[in-house]
Image 1 (cartoon, rainbow, N blue to C red):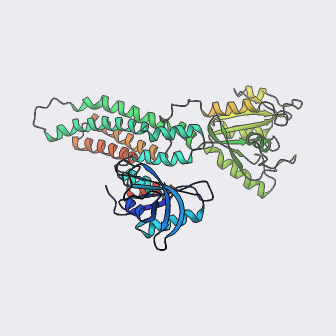
Image 2 (spheres, rainbow, N blue to C red):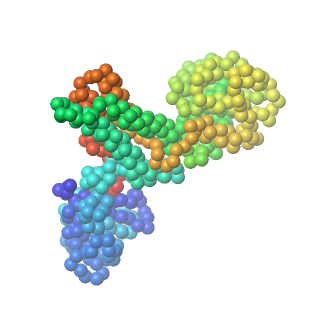
Image 3 (cartoon, rainbow, N blue to C red):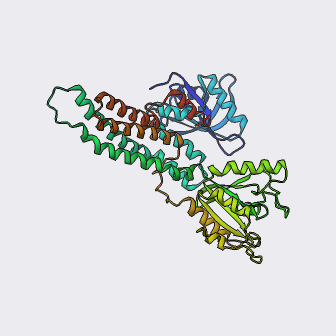
Length: 455
């Protein structure tokens, strides 16, 4: 499709820099370039994909704005499948702003957030998964996150979904053949599509289950440090993040609020959260902090239960264990540099393994980090691009799976073929929301609004 207007934007981050890139896309891009660019060697037109040296000049007063390189890229073999111009100017706010203003004065308009990528999607160059992966690449913090985003951009996830959609379409064809030609001698048994639906359900479930690994790569995990007061929770946070984030004192109950920071362990983002010590509160402020801790426990991906080697196992410890008995957890016994008073039989009787550490002496912390990673990634990582990282994708897959399971149920109870076809087409519709064929406009707008203006 060809859009009616030409858009422009600064594509490099704001501030001073060696280079600033200003981009245009649309049918006026070439003519605007001719209006404002004077090459060192005169020419009437600009060949596609050639770099030209010259000056951006304001035609109103013949004033030089900057010496630049420019490139014109002709449709359809461009990012947006439209004519594109990129100007490589010196970095700096004034220069880039003046060039952008000139473009707008000669027929372009300022792009909306993500509009270049949105045009690439609308013009069929990429699907919606690939469009979202562009933002994931920009926002990647680790190599694993980057490689997964690149895998999505290259079409790995799209290929998996296309295979699933192809299976469903085969089932739809079988059903609709019986609907359209009920009197014909067609050798089709509706129950023949059971193997197709079974395989499809397996593929969808596999993708849904991969969200846990995908979350690890894109969003990271939440790890809660729990324990009674003065066992070293704040000290452990500081030791793991390698900075003094939490206040550490010998006074029990120092931490009254949640204190958190992020680290990377083997490429996985992990949010470490220091919490108020769980005990009977001594004042209203500590009570509020303890309540925040209790509210955070259900959503935590992992709990580090910290115990004090120099202190006896208490009712406070027992109460904490009761709260986290069903949680994924690591037990860490701190202060092993001090004489032991903790009865570890209390742990072994509960079939618990534990890590022995001394935060003060820096003993056992690397092993603890390894155990955190292993505990979070018990299911193992899949290859890059093989898992989903987007909650929108997961929800659409769940809806599609429900429709396929409903179609299977309807076949078993001999419901009308039209009802079965309706369920299967709904399954296709939800998958289309992921790749973009059936995604509502408001969802599209929400997705692209998260992009920067120049992308």
